[in-house]
Image (cartoon, rainbow, N blue to C red; front, side, top):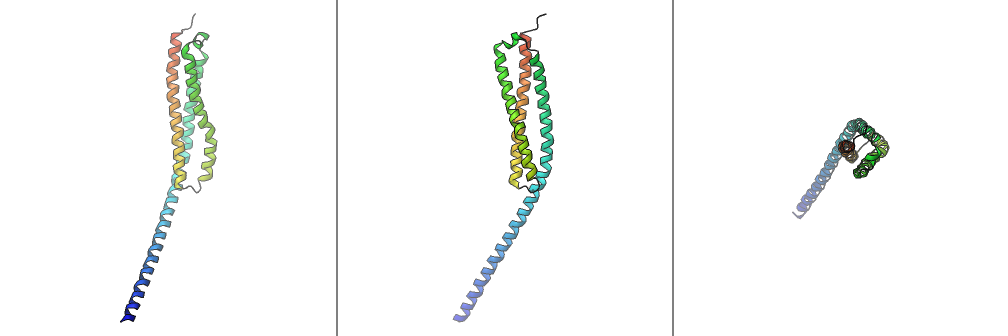
Length: 167
């Protein structure tokens, strides 16, 4: 009887070990499958997102450049009297700050492009999230600059109306 119990115990232990190994293998296969799907999803997401972001960057930058050109046109019309107005310095400081923020995005864009082009063939989910984070920062910076430029346009007109041209 003792032999049978020992044999039964060995069978149970062996069965448990086999089940444990089987479960481990199954878990490893599931993890590999999930990673494979995740990588495919990341690659698909990145390959769709990056070209869209490039097009949006070009559009945002084009709009920013139009806003800057409009402000440049107003600034060319400023007279010495307008430049002597106390508000003038504050407006120029605000314009300079917005221009610097836009320039920082424009300066960083080549590095982002280089990174995205190098990453696009085998991106991870983290790469896709990083791309989204960087693009969101860019769009927020451009949106803030456009808001500032709209405010400046209004302030420029106010400044010009307080100092009409003398004929």
